[in-house]
Each structure stands twice: as structure tokens, then as C-alpha cells.
Length: 258
Length: 352
Ligand SMILES: Nc1ncnc2c1ncn2[C@@H]1O[C@H](COP(=O)(O)OP(=O)(O)OP(=O)(O)O)[C@@H](O)[C@H]1O
Ligand SMILES: [Mg+2]
Image 1 (cartoon, chains in turn cyan, brown):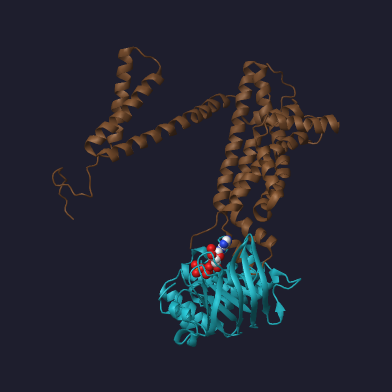
Image 2 (image 1 turned 45 degrees about the horizontal axis):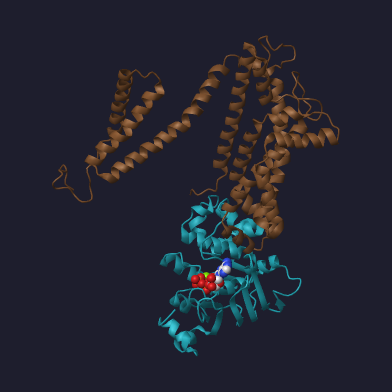
């Protein structure tokens, strides 16, 4: 199911403000790619162009190509809703639907998109919650509100919700930034398991996390505030963290700026 | 922890001297007594005069004593607290006395008979009769107005919050604002000219409902808009990112999250139009007989019944007016309570 993403010459705007400029990269299927870089360099913006969520922001506009295997996401006649079913997303802040139970939250993507039999849904919900390492903690309270879980549980609930619709790609924007070390570890382990089935892109400010979970790492930077963010380099994670080819990357990773 | 009492000399810097809990009550009692005493001596008779003197004494007294013992910050705090209480009491007195007066005079003739009979065979000066026809008319007119206004108002609000960009949205917002300010008599005249003078239809309940719609729609739009804006964008994005189309996101995520508030807003709008008299007077005309058909011939309504009975001038008519007023207030209060209940029941759940 996992698919390759091929980006070329991508610009993204907020109104007339060019937030990221001329980004080209390839994201390999069945691997984890980490995005690192200083705050405001456009990591979230770029991530959201990969499932056409950028245009949801008022004034959001994208130029360039994003190929998902052999289909251009920004080609003519492409339905953004269909794109988002293929490319799922987990947000920085856990955002379960407050009116829905744990069960309904996981089933939301399926239910809102069509009809399923109860038994089918039961299976998918259990599988997704197990996939998100949450099943044991919530199996006795599936009908309780999803917003009654702890922050870390909520985030895993959101991951379960995202994988329940079986996307090809999973985008995660700082999924652990609101979590404690134990929940973080649980989610990192989960990412390791999920990459067997999905293409995963994760934004993180935590260098160790990038080093631990990712196969490839992309470093973004911006020349100055108000300037567009750019991709500096993308390479195997080991190389980026041991012997990057650009000086700025080494400076950032070793904490000499940013 | 030491239990030593605090003497001013060796006072911990974190703990100040505090006046006992009963202090405000003591000052209140003292100033009330002083107010009464001063008034008696000076020969003032109005209860407002001695209450004012007592209030001033209370504020000044608690400030003076408290700033001596507790310091200026606490003294100011006490003054602010008492001002808030005064404002609260000033706001509650008219409301409480209105309810009290209405209940006292309304219960005289309010009974099962009164609620289930019309004025068909009862003269204005005779006792007896009832408000069945008026209740029926009010329920039908307000029900129809709600039926027309809620879909229009809620859909308009959804358009404004979820889709509206640019000129059209600005224009709609502007017209909703203008509509909010339309006096009810003008709404009535507008429908009168359209319905009776141009379409040449006779008076009927539904004509009144149309005028009530003009008053109700802007209220529904405004309150629904506010409720929809309270729904965090993250929820919309979470749903969109699951590949849910926008209209379904609105229907299944945005509306359920805000439905409690929307229903409260609708109930308050209903409460507002239930008391309207002017459009009913122009378009529904009123009658002493039971007319269950809102689409043909004049109907009665509660506010108009109150108005007409009070104008009739006789004692039994006055009693009936008060009883009808009590019914109207009770009806609106029940609506408000229902609205609160629904809001609480539908509020997003946070419990475990
Ligand atoms: N909704 C928006 N409207 C206008 N400008 C925006 C909006 N969101 C982000 N930007 C701008 O786009 C640029 C990139 O922001 P983005 O959120 O992608 O950064 P980021 O790399 O994710 O930062 P962080 O690490 O702090 O999350 C910033 O200059 C930001 O001010
Ligand atoms: Mg970000």
C-alpha cells in the first residue's frame, strides 16, 4: 500500500507571502523521513502541501508538482478529498472529536465516508487501536468520550483514527511535542511498526527522535525572517547526523544555531 | 506549623490580619440600624432614602475599618465587592418585583378552566372566559415562524462562517445587522403591504408568522454564527485530513459540536418573538373565538390578549390580563429552562 512521494519545484504561499520556495525531494515508500529545521522555516507548511491541506488555510496556494507514485496531486481533475484519504495526517496537538466516544473517533473516518457493517467496523476499530498501541488501555471504555483520555492516549487515538482509513502515507507534525517521555517512546515504537505498512513523514524538533526513528532526514532552513524556507539537504539519517554535506546542517544539529 | 496567634509585632510577611467572616454582616446590620435611626430623627419617610443612607454608611464603614485593620488593598477589595453586590441587587429588584406582582395578581383567575376556554361568549366586563384561543394562536404562530426561520437562519450562519468569503458574505452580514435593528411594527407593516395590500390576502396567523420571521432570523443567524466560530479549527482540519468532504465535516463534526449552543440561541429567539404584539395586531387582528387554522381568518395571541383585556378596563378583564401575562412569562421561562437543559445535555463531554 505504501507509495513513493516525489516533489519537484514546489512553492507554497499564504496570500502573497512565499512561505517555502522551490522544494524538490523524494520520500521513499516503507520508510520514515524526518523533517528538521528551525521554527518558522516551513516544515508544517510543506507537510500540509503533501495532502492538500495547505489550501484549507485562507489564502493558501501551491505551485509545483507532488507525485504520489505516478499521479500528480496538483494535476487537473484531482479531488483533494480523495487525496486526503490516501495521505493521512496526525497533528501536533491531539484533537479527538469531543462529541464522539473512543470507538466513534476511530470509526469516524470510515463512517463519515460511507456505510460499514457493525461487525466490520468493530474489527477495524480493534485493529487500529491495537495498531496504535492503545487497545489494552481503552478496551473497557470504548463508549466513553475520547476527550476523557490522557494527552498521550489522545494522541495515540488520533493515530488510530488516521490509520483506520488505511492511507498510503502518514504525515505527522510534531506528534510527540505535547507528550511525556513514556508516551513519546510508545509512539516512536509505533512509528517503527507502522513503517512496515505506510510511508511515514514526521516533523520533529527533537534531534534524538529524528535519529532514533527515521531512515532519511531532511533539513530545512530560512535565510532570514520573512524570507521563504528552503530545503537545504536530504540524506540518510546516519549521514546527516555524522557527516552532513552542508555546513549549516552540521551547525544546526550540533546546536550552534537555530 | 505553629498555632501561635498573630500579633501585629511579629507578623509573618505572607499573612496579614483578616477581619472575621461575620464582619460584612455586622457592618451591614450596623449601617441599616444607623440609616433607620438617622431617617427617623430627620423625619424622612421613604424607604429609598434610608436604604441609600444605609448603603453609603455600609461602603464607607467597611472601607474605613478594613483599611485600618487589613490595609488599603483589602479595603479596596471590600469596596469593589460591595459595589458589585449593589449592582446585582439593583438588577434583581425590578425583575423580582415584576415576577412577584405578576404572580400575585395572575393566580387569581388562573386555573384549568381559564386555560381551556375561549372568550367566545363572555363579555369584556363579565368574569369568566379564558385564554385557550390565545395560547393556541401563539403556539401556532410562533411554531410556524420557528419552522421558517431556523433553517434559513442556521444555513445563513453556516454559509457565513464556513464558506463566506468576499463581497457576498460582507453584504449578507450587513443585511443581517440591519435586520437586527428593524422595529417589530415596521416588520409588521412590511408584511402588511406585501400580504394584504399587494397579494390581497386576509388576516391570518401565518401572515403574523412571516413578520415574526423577519424579527427572528437575524437573532438566529447571529447566535448560530457565534457558536460555529467557537468550534476549534483543529476539529475541522482533523476531519478534512481524514478525507471527509467539507459538507460532511460541517454536518457530522461542526454542527454536533455546537448544537447545544445553537439550540439555546433558537430558544432565546423564540422567547423574544413570543412577546411581540405589534405585528400580530396588524396581521392577525385577534378574535375572541377559537380558530385552530393559522392559514385563514384572524387568530388570537397571548400578548394581544393581554393588551386588549387591559384596554377593556373592567376588573374581571384586568384579572384576565394578569393571568395571561403570568402564562406568557411561565411559557418563556420554561423555554429558557428547556434551552439550558438541552445545552447541558448536548455539551461536548469531557468526563471519563
Ligand atoms: N496561517 C498562516 N497565515 C500566514 N502565514 C503563515 C500561516 N501559517 C504559517 N505561516 C508562516 O509561514 C512560515 C512557515 O510556517 P510553518 O508553520 O510552516 O513553520 P514550521 O517550520 O512548522 O515552524 P515550527 O517548527 O515552529 O512549527 C512562517 O513564516 C509563518 O509565519
Ligand atoms: Mg510547525
